[in-house]
Image (cartoon, rainbow, N blue to C red):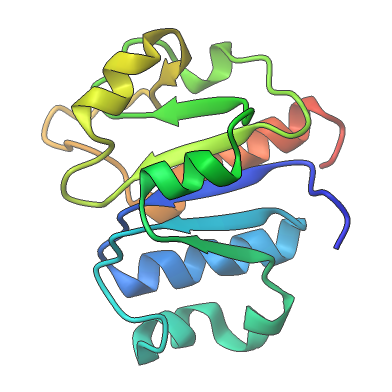
Length: 155
């Protein structure tokens, strides 16, 4: 497969339908999906498969056992990390072809040590609802990916 314009990285995703929906997003945009363990489900999960519909054969997916395995495979990856606890908006980023858009699991987000290691690369999707802690993982990935695609003339 040719090198994709962007990569979506899900670190320790927990909810199969969110990952399936993100896989469908990646198939629709020719974006590589990286699943970084530990995964909270089996890749054979019926809810995962259902959310991805019949698009799974068109998903460019890499599965990594854990974060060190991911970094060993992609040591020079240009990372953009997303967290509900960040201060800078995802719209302040100048996305470049080849960027890896990194999202954490649904209940924990990205590990604090990962965010602390690269604070200049951590962004958020601003929310005005005081009662909402974070957005749905698949929605967050779609929002950021489409902004990256828009900036690079792909939408």
